[in-house]
Image (cartoon, rainbow, N blue to C red; front, side, top):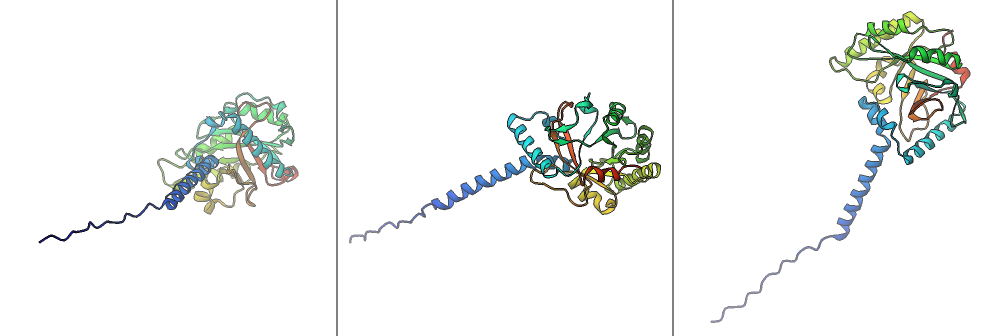
Length: 283
């Protein structure tokens, strides 16, 4: 008896969903592109949050980066041309020709300068004395700042600043520059040290000091306990165009170029005009 012919069952294979795969590839590409652009544009903010300075690559801008940076600086300064504009320097700027430091881009007048005086308990900026005197002769409104080292004694750091900086009538209040997180102490201990420094300085100079820090650092670690102090905030966010109302100063770039100064320079905007800035000075 003949066996019935068994037909092979054919299993239909699902055809690949071409449109779905194509969409996923394109979506992934654009997502990666957006993330890459975001990291690039916000890299200064990320590095500041992590406690890194970007001086090394700031001095190595390509021609295209230099153009974009200059355009960005011009746009921000033009938007705030009714406010006082200044810069800050330290020994890292080496020799400065102060007689050339009158404008940025020949359009925006420079009215004030912050000068690093000290760091930690025993460091004195090698150019402080020279810069401090030259800024006065140049008739800039000047201020001195101390770079705080979290793992060193706060009172010794305050005394280092006091013995180095002799403030006069017309100078800006002292500045505490805090950027680093401690390695060998808790955040609470850091705050105790900062408070001791601030109290010692205020007692000596009879004026409330200014706190300088990155925006993220200040918001995450300092704002709750130190909101009564005037603020100088560093925020290099490419998309930010304005100061917050509680910022007295905004450092919006570290990549400016100023005649008379080699390399890149930090630029700051005061939240008011020059007359208002003079009212903030020691009387």
